[in-house]
Image (cartoon, rainbow, N blue to C red):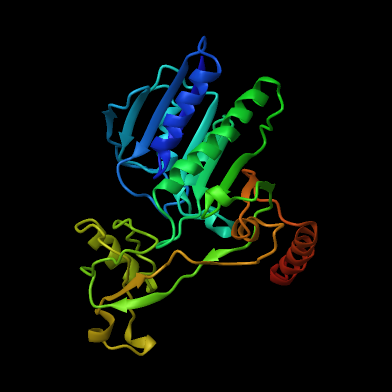
Length: 334
């Protein structure tokens, strides 16, 4: 019995359909058991966040050929809960697949991505994992591109399942795979390193927290985070207010005393800002890295680990610096 665990994104159902059909045709004597777990709503930009101190709602979903649930939590929640043994008959699937995401996940963007987090959570739990993303471009990409991307993804999944049986799949990393904007014209597969590309971010002031989000890269309306509370008085006031009113949007509440040059009227005024993050990414065009190779038309395969390993030069610098820093800050009596 071949088992797969999915975390859903925009192109999931096509990938699921291709995978089940492909596995059946390859060997009709084997049963493909697919477990599906996906978030209720769009979770773009939630990264590897998890739900704590409140329950997660789970509802069964009727998907032919699979046991499926939708979850109120994050992508990491979906994978973690799926592997807990509480939802599915087996908590040790052959593979965790996360995607296909509507939008690329290159460079620093893997830190924000819920899709990549789904695969990372799978590896944390000891299961080989792959994240898939399509480099969707508004005005250029169509839903048909997901069909092509899904077909390409299946070939990778099939190879992974085959080589897992031979012990050829590394257990020390997960794969982050990005498919170019025009999948039909891809230049083939290319192993790349994680680059330093990032999303183009622009903040702007808005009149209130009732401001309606424009259709941009990040569509999740519950992204509200209180970014800063200045001074001890601010912390106490904000803590009390949080007990009575939930956050509704991104906001900065700045409360400063007269010693900072603000009057009491000015200090009590709330300011609201909206993050106008867009789809465009900026980064190196070097094809050695994921972002550059993807823009050149390659299907990029980037191995990612669970730990952050700095370069040798950086580690040496940090070792020397911390020794001098400790010496400088140590009390003279010691």
